[in-house]
Length: 218
Image 1 (tube, rainbow, N blue to C red):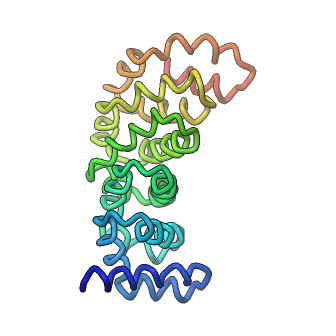
Image 2: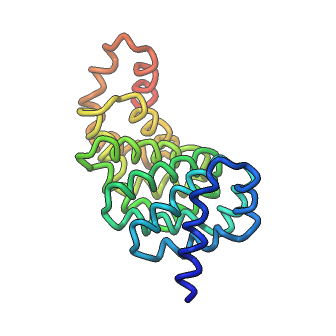
């Protein structure tokens, strides 16, 4: 019965996307806790509705406190583990929005073991998924205490970011690496991952921004 109530509640949210006062009702009415419950389900249609609603709320300042309190980001980690490309694209888009400014959301994502599925998407052959994963890593690499930079460094994220320099646009990748290099222990990991073989190429580029980033890493 509880499951049915949650399904009806979340399904009704999709019709409210364009109304600011309705968004506030969603926040104040405790529907975020219902959305978190949905993340434990395996119903793709219901999950998609829940993510769409969160994506709508992700830019609402009034929603941030409730999103943090309900630890929405940990629920998102479960969605990433389902290996459903459509849901993963929506989930990564939502995670990107939620981690742009709120450091607590970044911490909740990492503490919820979000790095493990996120790194899988760094290796995806789906370009959209891969680029979304890089954008989330970029958000996570800024504004957090050193212990989180260390955790990112101890994952295999740095190795995959360096590998992607051979196939994807380098600016955001180099920016991620530069941000992560603020933690001293990550500097040796970046070198070990093979950055030096790319250094000469970017030092010769006419793009001054790329030159600046590679110099920060050397």
